[in-house]
Image 1 (cartoon, rainbow, N blue to C red):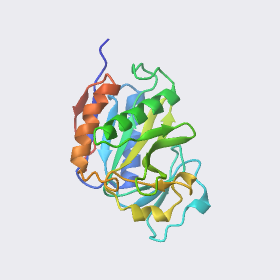
Image 2: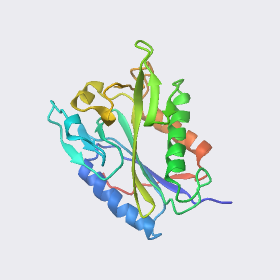
Image 3: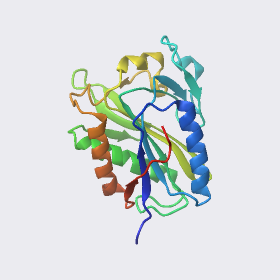
Amino acid sequence: MTFSPIFLQKSKKIVSYPDALQHMQEYTQKIYEKKQPEYLWFLEHSPLYTAGNSAKEHDLINPQHYPTFYTNRGGQWTYHGPGQRVIYIMMDLREDHQAFPPRDIHAFVNAIEDWISLSLKQFNIQAEKRKDRIGLWVIDPITNKEEKIAALGIKLSRWISCHGIALNVLPNLEDYSGIIPCGLPEYGVSSMHKLGVHCSLDEVDQVLCQQWQKIFPHPLIKKQIFID
């Protein structure tokens, strides 16, 4: 069986969050109407906090007075900022993707987490899933405590996905002090840099694209869609 390609775009400049939301809304409508292929968007945002549909007001502290945005994605509060690889995933879950059956959100999320975990493994980082927590988790080598290295928040509209993954490569982890990440005060936040992997976003992107093909049968085609 031959699977249709998925467009891949990497924005070189910082993308404003409102612009990203508008673009995702417009593009997912085109996917729904079968007017555009599925789409992965690699980007960075300036420092900000976003609330998912389960976010609690008391989990926002924000001493930095960063912009805050309320979204319709799943999850609670999270942080976005430079040095973090944000990947917005716009896919049609009405279709067969081999890695997960149609209209199976849990299998879809599982496949996305497997993709990120497999990619981190190439950098000798053991990132694991947890049944009771979304995202990917690592063990801090000094404290031996679990910390989140990648957050996941997905929104489905008529079985078209948007939002996606935020992978901490080398962000300023002090910025997480403005929130209780994902409403879990007992867990910390990590990054590839904190774990001793001093790589660039470009290097991470290359590995992500390579490992994509090990999970999903769809080839990636680089194409500029959003003009930034």
